[in-house]
Amino acid sequence: MKTALFPGAFDPVTNGHMDLMERALRLFDRLVVAVAHREDKGVLFSVEERLEMLREVTKDMGNVQVTHFSGLLVDFAARSNVDVVVRGLRFISDFEYEFQMALMNRRLSGSFETVFLMPSEQYSYLNSSLAKEIARMGGSVAQFVPPFVERKLKTKLASAGA
Image: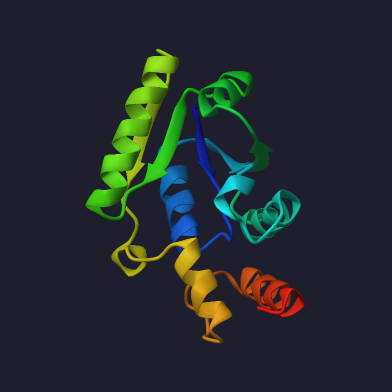
């Protein structure tokens, strides 16, 4: 059974993330979706909230495990007995960053491989930061995030006074 790791901040999970998960499950038997502890990145949702959202939106996908990690990705992958990571590429700027990270991860762990997937065209411009900004400005994010996430985003922004 071949398992891949799909790490990210998922702050919040978007339809683009969902698209990449579905694509990864066509290639791998099992997918570990791992929320990174990234408080330095100015996240809106806590790790627990991001885990809750991911568990809810992946519950019907099958063969998806949702977890979290801190520290080096290669160390987490080794502890999880996973040697393939899946990353999404939207634009050339993604490629430059992800290529550098893939080479560094391979250097840190010789058995570690990165598989790059391109999202569907309809999600090629989408990221969590844009979805949050639209929501903060009062716009609808219904086409960008799953319904459960949309509700959580509205509630979180209302309680934060954003």
